[in-house]
Length: 366
View 1 (spheres, rainbow, N blue to C red):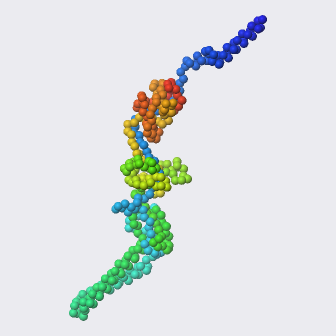
View 2: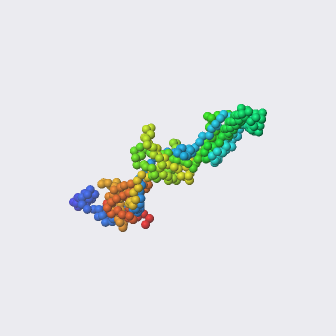
């Protein structure tokens, strides 16, 4: 009989234990978990007041400046004005040359002979005129002979001028000042006006031609600030092409859209000290809107709540979820507005996602 009573007691105790595990009644474990507050370690950053910008982006490359009213183009293809053989190359790639300096010489032996013959003909004609003037009318001369001598002198002078021009054409000079970028000729080459001997670019007169999407072009205006940074060409790692940003000013906006790319051309003069080179790819950022005196927080501190964007403001040792309205984003900052949000408060940057409305926190590093 005692054995049966003990078995029933053990069975009843086991049943009570199962009921407790299934939620029936209060357990020791439940009372223990309700006592201590949960503390979460987080990383914080301050709410700052700053000026934010909205940007329109584009892409393009660096080119020599085109011809403008009163200014020649900033690049020139050097060609021989007449046919001949290259006998001298008086420049080198990378050399800076002045306008008018001789870069190439063509074979001038025939032209030199013709020039000397023309000079002698002028001297002979001048002596005839002087002789007629010394004799004077009635002294074995006539007005007709004098006029013929004058005409002969004029013809000889014209021939001399033509010979000088032909000789000058054999000295190929620089039409603009700049840097010799490329030489395409060798000594002894037979060339004519269709052969490009060299290319010169004035590196102090470069522009960035950038393409922006047509939907963004309506925000772009002349005089706006544009930031240029070296870009990557197709097949080149973008990280390897990264470089400092160069600030310039928009000088020209095309009035039509390129139907092939649905973009609009925007042009800015490249600063002389930029370090950019002709043909280099660039990325462009145009500041089309500026909002000063705005509250901003790190982008990663804004999380999506049930009712919209939220941030967790730290008050003492407690993080309080606060609903905000976001605005412009620039870099790692985003504009925020919300009740109780003010400059200098700390906001949770890492660990904000999944926090309850109020949570005890411990700031990492403190």
